[in-house]
Image 1 (tube, protein in one colour):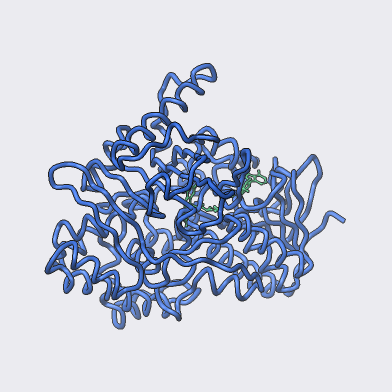
Image 2: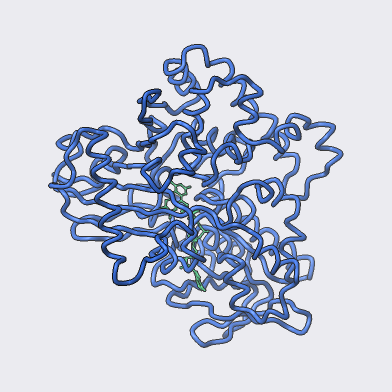
Length: 503
Ligand SMILES: Cc1cc2nc3c(=O)[nH]c(=O)nc-3n(C[C@H](O)[C@H](O)[C@H](O)COP(=O)(O)OP(=O)(O)OC[C@H]3O[C@@H](n4cnc5c(N)ncnc54)[C@H](O)[C@@H]3O)c2cc1C
């Protein structure tokens, strides 16, 4: 049988939730994944005696408020149960230089405000005022529900939301008089959304940071692969089908330019609706261009690709205590200012180091530990003369530069303890995820292409009949929760459309 109600392309976070949700609603569902395992970024890999977490630094599983949509709510509704281990701290941040600092911020709103006040005496009131803005934002988001925002209602009842919606994070903090050092500390997480806070929508950043503070960062025990497997089980329990090693090479259209199926593994598979967890650029590359509207093509070409990373995974032959490490999430900055961190990113201006053993003490064999370095870069940052011949040397040089910088900053000795090392670059992500230029954050969430603009123009921007999108490239931007939630949004839109069509 090659006829389905819904075909989902890509088993990343978005695709997994989308497929499980439509299957649970009773529709004949097929999920197609090009790899032999699910998850996309949410997976794991093994080198020697270490199982590495390839992507997840910190899971933001709860919403900013109990009545807000959250990844935990979605997992519950799908019956996907994954025990999570909560962290007490948000992160430690070391900013170098004459006006530098070394601060650890605590999770939980009161503990967070206390740690901010300790680091920047007198900042508590303005910092609290900033985070109090989450209530009007969440009220407005709830009022909008799943439908399009009603501008008149929004203006009348949610004026704070409207006031904030058009501004950057830094503009809102400046307006509230948040002291500069407190702003710099709060801005530490900008790399998680890939856009410096002078251009990052305040509402978007505030929602993410508040969710981390209130819900506390968490980690699954068996790497993010465990989350993906739980969603596969939810899909299969609901009668859905997943096919691995099934790369979609073509999207098929009917006479009305509506998607009606795909080709995977040389086989034509037909569906009433198709949900793509892969970025529009790759859907259009696999489509006859005549079926794609001019607007969609122009939009895909106009959008800037978001951030990507170089990542270094180390398996060490000593414990974290022997190494002298005591933090789970550590940000190392050469400069306090996010814009300068972004501009100088080629030269160790910002990187993150995670020690999974701090969150999960027995995450590695006894007497060992892991370190996971994340270096934010942009898709065009790779050296122009990078060739297959010098690629290995480039990776080795990057790894050595950052490991030495870390050793110097922390006063620890890492190099003699390396038992396993793996380095991923945008080339790795391009090959693994098939994203253009190895982008992992979809499109950059900056300026005109921010979360608000995307939400308002969603219907116009995604205009191919029967084709729906989800994932980090979609309207909510990157991240585990956004991936999951857009999967849910796409599934609900498909279910509503199928019901309307009497199916
Ligand atoms: C190093 C790193 C660190 C990160 N840290 C965090 C973090 O701490 N917290 C956080 O919330 N987020 C983090 N993220 C971001 C998060 O991982 C992603 O935003 C999210 O997982 C993206 O999910 P997605 O739904 O877009 O799917 P993706 O992960 O992009 O998966 C897409 C899937 O589609 C498949 N596919 C592609 N093309 C085809 C095709 N033609 N046919 C069939 N299948 C196809 C791919 O194989 C893949 O399985 C990080 C990402 C990386 C890489």
